Image 1 (cartoon, rainbow, N blue to C red):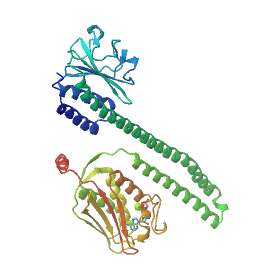
Image 2: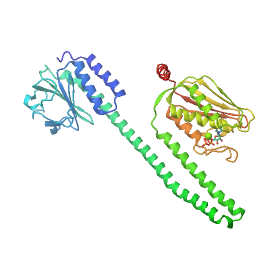
Image 3: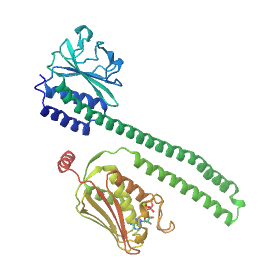
Length: 407
Ligand SMILES: Nc1ncnc2c1ncn2[C@@H]1O[C@H](COP(=O)(O)OP(=O)(O)OP(=O)(O)O)[C@@H](O)[C@H]1O
Ligand SMILES: [Mg+2]
């Protein structure tokens, strides 16, 4: 049996382990899959158990609390169950486990000869049990040890990823909770300011002169503006924590859809939309829609002084994906501030001239970054602006499916 265990088999297990590391995210899944592959590749008629926290010379091994027991015909999960082991564990090759010592559920045949007991550093240990006495346990040890070492690395990575993911998730939850409580706490006094100034205007309006009325109006305007800023912070923070659902997106039809929607609100203005055929992107449709809404709204807003506004949307191939561009012939901006535009509440134009709070491009940047893309702006004072963003390419097969599903 031991002779059948060769380095090709060891390589197969290691190869499987490498694949598993990429796809499994829990320590249990890593362990059970690797140990199962080990049994499969070696054809070893054995039972394997693993346990957390047990070291090689740990007296606790006499009674092992199992994470799982694995047979070569499948996995028997008995988490938390105890397995009694003989006291002679100091000599693994001779320790015999009596049939009576093994529980009924234990995989593979009995009685077992305790064969190998290997540590997984910083985790616990694995027991390999076999009903037949191998000529020597040494080749098995040599085969098993490097696998356990890789497994240990994989487990460490796996645990680190889990810890970091948990930390990140908890930070995100805190951030969201903070935004909600801030918005809630700020809204109450804002409502009071608005409410009291309303009462002041109704009950005492007659006693105020023109300047008094103007100041009161300013108070109410600012209260409204502040409540809009709070709403914007909330929208921005939601975009950061929202779960993404990625699928192929037909960028041409999505842009047309958004343009049509915005055009209905353009009473009396002459705007020409020039939307080129664009390659599909891979992403969260609702979020990318928001990107297009924000960019097209800006293009429409900053072309308002133009008698004939032109908004062009197109794409160029990019090294990592597709680059898309929304270009307009509006008032433009000074290129030296190009990086500032994407910051929260950063604005280059006065509110009297162009309304807004300065959150639109910050949301665009956050959404594109969450898709692994980048954003940049080009512009010239009084000579229009171009906003660029990149997105991953859609997988062609998947897009075909989406198109078929829609038909
Ligand atoms: N197409 C554009 N042409 C000229 N300037 C632009 C254009 N798009 C954005 N900007 C400049 O970048 C600033 C930030 O844009 P952003 O969309 O974040 O905010 P906003 O449009 O002012 O307000 P909001 O989007 O929150 O309603 C704008 O105030 C403007 O100065
Ligand atoms: Mg905007």
